[in-house]
Length: 466
Image (cartoon, rainbow, N blue to C red; front, side):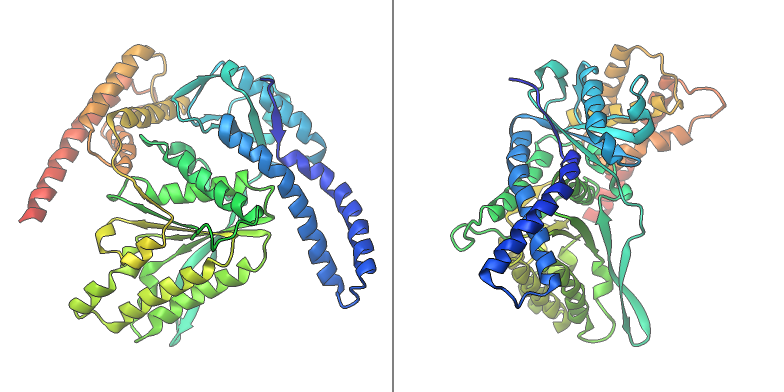
């Protein structure tokens, strides 16, 4: 199969030409239909929607191909020079081809010969393929996306209650620099990341195809559950970032909302449900724009949706019941919009209200990493330390691999959060100098920290069982 390059950003080069052509066509049709009641704003809105729909019709088959038999190459640019997009994409294509073998979710940030890459590109993200590595001559297609992240501060949703400010949550405009590389740092045994991306793409594709939702139901809600520290929240933020990058031809704007559950439970009676309604009212207002895609994260949702049956049996205050009912009501209302995705996480799925579980299209368990996944996490940590010149790099690769496998076996059962903290904690226990630290020193320190961590976990488990 011939190699193909699909450059999403280059589509912008032709938008202005199509815009002028579409304006003439639309105005002609409007005059013929004698729609004299339309204002100028109405006409502009129709024009923009028409152009975006035309753009989406062309983008969806390309995205479908990238999801099915290719992979995404995402280029984080310092600036996006419109007159150089095609040339820049060609250099990215050639540079990736030169790598020979690609590691899963590889991040490239060193460019030698390619002058445009050095000038305009921060990082190149290569993925996602589920195998640990793939040869570049086995790549059938390459979907290249050029983008620039935003760096503005998140908007805080604050309400004034009895003279006191309460922050209900935050809103980010995506893609945002704070969410960069989150997706690539996550390692799972099952193809969770591709499953989530395929789900979001399917939801959007069904909407563009005008699928009747009374025939095929879609709630646009995902529930991730599992023990703390296994990457549920990070996965949600990484997914939001990737959706905003890969689906950029389908929407003009992407917003990410994170609900602060703790702030909802007001000390003033009945204010909790009102606070929740305020938060969702703002989301609903934005969703009326069909060219804006909204992603909501409700972290540790069990604090909001504790079973109504449990609340009644334990004499919980009625305010809790109002919050649960309000949450369910707003989730039901959001189903009328096709440009929204609700992400929820929980450490205690057994206490979540069954009505919320039933409303989730996907319910996925995120557990502690396996030995193989732990090895890849440690490997990524060591590569980072070597690239930043903190540990000695001239270490035999096979010997390094064996050492990392042994550490991974000793680390079985620990959360991903603990695994990623371990190199830093171990490094802090080494007598540091201006010279490189030898990997053997770090291996020894990590081994000692693993023993300490497991002893601590055993003590806490015994304490909790008492």
